[in-house]
Image (cartoon, rainbow, N blue to C red; front, side, top):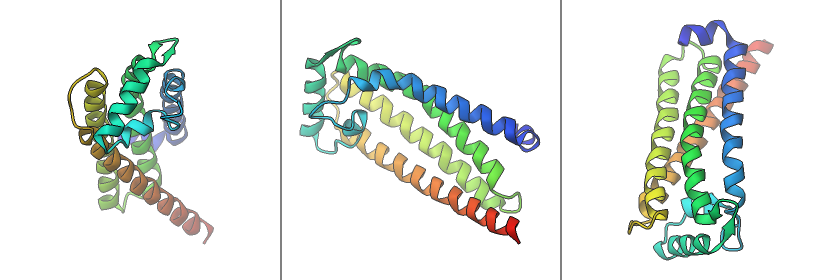
Length: 176
């Protein structure tokens, strides 16, 4: 697989990019129902609901809002289900970018960044499982999904920052 990505750089990039866009667009219809006065950031509001009372208010609010999925609560559950496909897409996209941007001689950084991409995906899976169970009525602490969500976004931020640094480094190296 790594050899294919190295040999077919453009094709690998575009396939992973299209997969990411398609997976993300599949989530969009269900996320529309989740934007309310209580949740202006849609699913992100519950991802970062560290306080249990806030998470309970969001769940209660979504259970009372009707939309084409029945309720916004049902739309959130559908959104989470589609997110599993999106997780696979963004992990693959990051790995392709890492293999294309990080030089072979930076083996340590390549491995570390791939690990971070996979870690972000695993944290997202953990977050989704607990958030889904909570939205289905389980009596769970919102910390079970808020903490993994925060760690996921932190991992993605560090990963994107590192990729940008390697891209800038590559641009400066190419211009010399």
